[in-house]
Image (cartoon, rainbow, N blue to C red; front, top):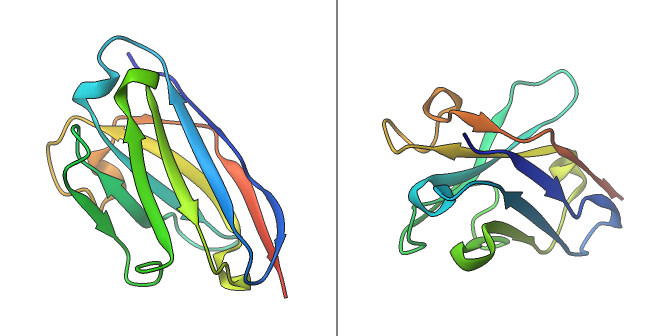
Length: 124
């Protein structure tokens, strides 16, 4: 069992930066791949970024590539999402999730544990 808690969301102007954190509980946190997804009002939850258990491999949605960076610190049971050059279309609730690695990192059904989400609002 892994519990995930996101933090770091807020209101920022376009062009600004935020860093989201996702703190995980449990001794097995480092064995899970981790992902970030986001959901805007009226839209489906969408893939943003993912990282494998060791941090050696990362994946990004085309819409955030070059602007967002995912990383993890297994000693702290934490995964991060550094978001730069934010745009109004990045506004959404951001969720972190844990996957045992069965299936693609890009799809929600591959993830078994989810956090409650943190709101990110980018003003124009």
